[in-house]
Image (cartoon, rainbow, N blue to C red):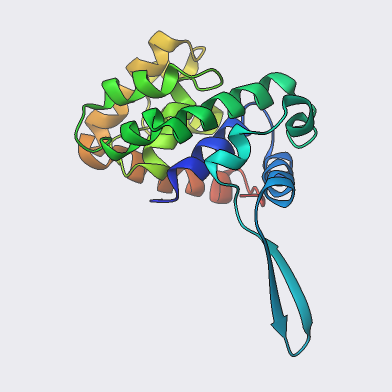
Length: 201
């Protein structure tokens, strides 16, 4: 948490509907193609790293070239470029700076105004990149533990926008509104690791 807001935005825009292996692959490819190369000399030899690209680097990217890094998803590439341009212009950057001063709904509306960012992605950006521990992202795993551990009936239904908001409100009432997202993320990892026995994070 409290990661770089721009990096978080791009990472979660790459995360829609795919597994961790592909997400990591996309982010690594974006860094290698558009980020700064960092070479570290060690007694064992040369180590090469790549910094995450700046907003200006992705803002000037060509959609077809960036799509090669986003699992050949051109729409995703176009959305990332548009968001990077908004960040570079200052509009999105100012929204991030003021993230702690506005209510969560206003922040989510600002983020969701950009293509490729829906409620869940906006909540992930708010929680992990903007210090909003009251943001509570919900996916399949969160739905499952909300039902199994807390008996929230709505967690057994489809995750429509209306149901998403209902589940969030009920989760906040149980976990406490101020740190619901922080608590929810700990429960998310417990569910995946201890209940589902998943290895990839």
